[in-house]
Length: 223
Ligand SMILES: *[C@@H]1O[C@H](CO)[C@@H](O)[C@H](O)[C@H]1NC(C)=O
Ligand SMILES: *[C@@H]1O[C@H](CO)[C@@H](O)[C@H](O)[C@H]1NC(C)=O
Image 1 (tube, rainbow, N blue to C red):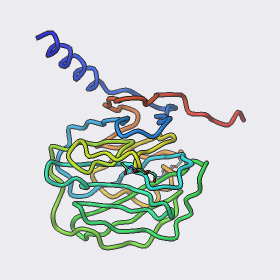
Image 2: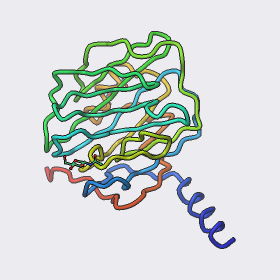
Image 3: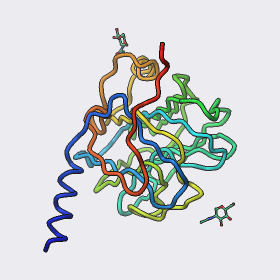
């Protein structure tokens, strides 16, 4: 009973949204467990935009963003390969965006968009658009969803692989239920005005860290 109450309290705490403006998640070491779970009340998605900023020095594969439902472990996955190509998966289908200028040891803005009506997906790395490519048409994402930062879900809420874990910093995670306009994405990239995510909002984020993940101040230039 006491354990149950404790779990209930932890769940309740996790549900209180926090304004993480000026903060970042630091993932200081590779593990197969450290992660951040993000929660949202939205469970049905017919279009998405996910934007985040990341900093890493990993050459190997890594996961930036992993959303799973019970039957589809890669319902949304943003993933980098060792060769710096970026993969975007929706409903277990994926496209590869090649020739991306993803450099190590620097902050990058990464936005991906998808719309089930056209099936088209696009990557915006530091405000620069990729080719628009065919991904998944017709079907939509339907929860209960689990969103994980720091690990790649190969099963619903688990199936983590240390060799796909994220090491570095992540910040400014937003998710929308529609495709943002190019100007909105460029504004996000340039830290100008943009509508905060209506599925995930960094300024009112419901999350829970698991294992060694730190919430720290962003390290900004002094001038
Ligand atoms: C991770 O990579 C290391 C080095 O390549 C390898 O030895 C190890 O078996 C891998 N672990 C898993 C769980 O795949
Ligand atoms: C982009 O930001 C500028 C400056 O804050 C603002 O005037 C403009 O309306 C924004 N554009 C969009 C599409 O939101």
